[in-house]
Structure formats: structure tokens, C-alpha cells
Length: 640
Image (cartoon, rainbow, N blue to C red; front, side, top):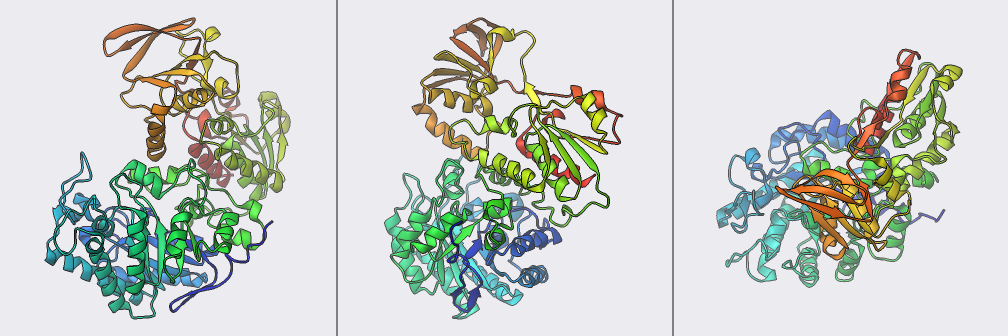
């Protein structure tokens, strides 16, 4: 394994000395109380990452004003009543030897009217888009009030014991709204040219610095590039970086993009289609312009990539968000020489999707995220014999955790490979990262000493012979083929992804995630594909940023789409469809079904009452996602 000396070397910012150069980037979680006070759950979440040896933890965006709230259960800092909870959080992080910074934030036009009780504030009265409220243009008095609120929140952070503050000037929130010509169309001192658009940010920083003193570390998070046609250029951001340095900023945390659009959000939190270290070139450009330390972010939870960024002088510190969700102990594992035991974040952005839906933060691989107090993998009171049938992601996770708890575990898989449907899920373009999740699970069950039997189909006879104390059934699902369609002349999306031979003219029935991923896979193989979807929306079940990127690629793919179209009948080589009252036949060399799946419940029904403890997990209960299978596999073993 490559040496990781640089990321584990100490680093000093102002009065703060960090034990390493690994930062946990700010990321919403919805774990706080509805009124914005710190909960025990939020403390446990952050503390777990401190135990994992993060050098510095940056909290989620914390509003400096009631008018700046955008999330119902986000941490707040706009009143002294929040101080007791903030102090408890700081104390817990410090007890683990890590530092902590409070991110100061105002959502501006992205604030939630139902939370703030009024129209959102913004530099100019420009709505985010259809369905979003028109914000109120801030007058000079309101601008000064918010500047003072940033200062007061910084003072609270210092009083609570935080080691630093980070002023959030990125990603489409209020300070960014002042910086961008798209959202700032003022013609006074705070709008117009790049210098005037930066005035608000610089006055906020001056006020913050006055409140916390000269040596207290003040970070600034900057979107160095908006990645939008009418956004500001990198050259303006480089000039602002110089002004930020002159204003007393201790370090610039360089990001990109804006959450005001789905394509912009994909730039903020790059999904797996983006390269590792995506924003590093932006950080490097700003580092060449200033003398203060620079933080790089954007798919930097890969230790080798992070080390290289620091060694090559592209940045001074690295920040990672999603990597800490997937495996809070990844820095500690690197430090202990266990790099290959890090659970890899595959950048699927399931976590981001949850936040877009205003749900609690969750990771499709890590079931314990947000439940750090409850879901501890402790040794079982009594070691038992556990039999698991099905080697997909749910079965593998169950085997891993059961073995860690000290049980004797045997895993049966009817095919010659472990991984189940996730093996197929990693085949379409831009999905190859999913293979890493299966590879990690496979290696972990082997390291833990699980007995694995491939090419072995679980049945009643084997269960009777093994006589397990606990049986976990994870037999998954099979493709759904409507009874009125003859399977003899149809192919399933699973068969296509597995490599079955087919024609060049393809009709795919079903335009959900599986259907469109299969369509792109075939398009890249030179096929001409038509996707038929009954709903009005294509790929409605796909994570939103990933979907937006797919739709952007779609015009350049050899794929045509028919929405609001119902399939009435299928014959050999053609399908009869009804598109909003218009009936027609569609012809193709190959017809592919992507209509969902059906639970494999036969074994589950036959074994009921025949073992002391029977638990079913994943798609054999009901077809869903890998997340449900993995989480249920984890929880199942805590019950044994």
C-alpha cells in the first residue's frame, strides 16, 4: 500500500492545530430537533466520525437567522438558546481528539417559507423557478441586519467552544446569490460588476472577524465555478479569492456548482459518472493565486487520491462528505494499515436523494448511519449456527455482521458468483462503481470466516440437514413477466445485461431506472432502441441528479422514448400500444421487458415453522432497492 504520510501530518490554521489534514465536509442530515436544537442523535452521528479520526468536522449548514432556514431538522445558530446544545456537541467531539467547525449559513431565496413564516430574502426578486416563491429583494437595512447576524452566530460558535467557523458562500445560497450575476441584478453598491457583487461576502467576513478576533480560524466555502452558461467565470472567483485573503479569511474551501438546479447539484455533489477529485483543478487554480491554505473537496474519500492531491501541491487539506457516511472509520483504517477494509463510497447519491426529499440522511451501504447509538455490532450472548440462503447484497451483509457477532455462519448461493442483482446493476454505463460495494462485501465475509457454498441452491432438504438455530432467507426476486405475454419470444433486461444475444432493433417495455439503463447499455453497443413507458415521466425511480445527467445525455444516444404509452399486447417481433388514445403497432427484432420484478417467496413459505428462527430480507419480501436488502440484512443479525 502507498504511504499516506502527508494526509496524516499535522497542520495549523490560525490558532488551530489539526492532527491530520482530513476534514469531514458539511452535509445536511436532518438529525436535529425540529426547532433546530442539537439532538443526542446528531451528537452520536458526528461523534462517530470523530472516533474515525477525522481531523476536523465541519457541521451541516447552520442558519444565522430564522429567515435563512431551509431544512426543518437542521442545526441552527441564530439565537443564544442554541448554545447549550452546541456546547454538548463540541464537548463530545473534543473528547475524541478531533476539532470541529460550525458552518454559518443563510439560504436566501432557497429558504423554506413554511419555516421562516415570510417570503425568502434575496439580492434580487428572482424566483428559483416554477413552483418556487418569488423572494423579496433585500433593502440596505436588511442587508446590514443579516451581516450582523453572521457576526453574532460566529460569536456564539466561539462561545460554544468551536475551533473554527466556515462561512458558506457557495452552492446557490445567499452569499452565492450576491456573487452570481444570475441572481444578483442590483444596481447599487451590492450589485453590478464582480467587485460590487462581492461586497456582501466581504462585509460578512469583516463582521465575523471582528466578533471572533484575529487568530480564530475563519473558513470560506466558495463555488469557484457555477458550471452554468450564465454563471460567473473562474477568473472572477480567482479575483475574489485574493479579496477573501485580504479580508482575513484563514482558508478557502473550494467547491463548485449550485443546488438551484439538478445539473448544478450534480456538480456540487458529483455522482459516480464524475471522476474522483472532481473539484481539485478548481482548488489548484485558487491555490496558485493566494498564499493562505486551500481545502479541496469532491470525491476525495479515496486515500490514494487525497494523498496525491496534497503531495502534488494542489491543495493543503482535503475534505470528504459521503465517504464519512459510508464508512466513518476510513481515516483510522488507513492509519492502521487496513486500507482494503474501507467500505467504499460508490457515489450513488442515494444520500443526496434522501435530502432532496427532506428525509433523514441515509446511506445505501451503511445501515447504522443516523442510528449510531442503537445499531452497535456487539458480540452475541450466545454463538449460534446461522444459515443464510442467497448471496446478494442483503445475504452478504447479514453474513458479515452475523460472523462479526461471533455466530457460525454458512452462506448458500445458487449461482457461481456472489452479488445477486447488483452484479447486473454494475454493468450499465456509468454504474461500474457499484461493483466496489459487492467486492467489499465479498472480501469481508471471506475475511470474517464465513463458510461460502457457491452453486448450491438452498432448499428444505439442506435446511433439515444443517439444522440451523437461525435461518435468513435472501432469495431475492425474478423479473416480472405478465401472464398475457409469452416468455418464449421475450427477453428480460436482466438477460440483456448478462450478455444474451439480441438484434439491433430493440423495443424496451418499461422506462424506469432498469429500462433506461438497459437502453443506454444497448445504445452504446450500436442498437437502435425505443423505450415505452406508461407514466408521464421517464426514469421516475432514478436518483434525481443521476436522472438529470442521463436526460442530458439522451439526445446524443440512439434512443427514442414514448411516454404515457400503455402496452396492450405483445406478439413475436411487435407490440400493440395505446398512446393517449392512439393505437399502433411497434416492431422490433428484440423485445425486452423491464417491468419490475416479483418476490421469490416459495422457499420462505415452505420453511415457515421448521426452524427456531426464520428471518426474510430484501426482495424476497418485496422487490425494492439494494439499500433495503443491505439494511435488512444488517438488522436481521442484530435480532439473532
